[in-house]
Image (cartoon, helix red, strand yellow):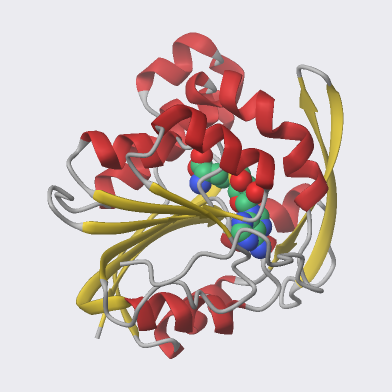
Length: 248
Ligand SMILES: C[S@@+](CC[C@H](N)C(=O)[O-])C[C@H]1O[C@@H](n2cnc3c(N)ncnc32)[C@H](O)[C@@H]1O
């Protein structure tokens, strides 16, 4: 599936944001994110509900972080290529899965030239596309590397959530936001883009996909046991948006 891998190639694209943030959070992701309620009891159940049976399928984990999905997909019998622009995240994923997957350092702002046309059954990209200003390149690359009928499953920050939390004035803009996250070793500054819902949907359709499903899910019951206040909030205000789209 992978035609060439260049680990030495500089991967910092001019539009990339939050690379240093993820370098700082790699250990944290490896140690804590597996069981973080937002991921374990909200994001993952919804994403997994959109995935097909991946046994024997070729899957790209696009922005694998510390490799939770990479391992999940391997355990389900998929052939997995995982990529991320953070060298430390790549290390964490390799630590988790060894050589069972191809784990490649690359930037989603650049063409994924290490993957052949029409070679994959599924592209999974969880909680990552909001780090990209321009979705044209990445979505046309996802379309190029998928076989006909192949599936793109992704989750992103919900446009309503970012618009209201950051108290922005103009919903219709695509704009860079500055945030600060608490981790076990202090606060980390993170930047990402918000965009209106019509931009998200139009970009997917214009890249040659048919949207099959869109989810604004509820957290699962376990969330309520661990963090009842946040559970309550999530049952009233969506945090993430989930899409499954099929290559035409
Ligand atoms: C919130 S994490 C999500 C990780 C993983 N998909 C999950 O759900 O556990 C976002 C990941 O996207 C990666 N990332 C952000 N911008 C990227 C880019 N332009 N190219 C490749 N990876 C990127 C970060 O390094 C980080 O690992």
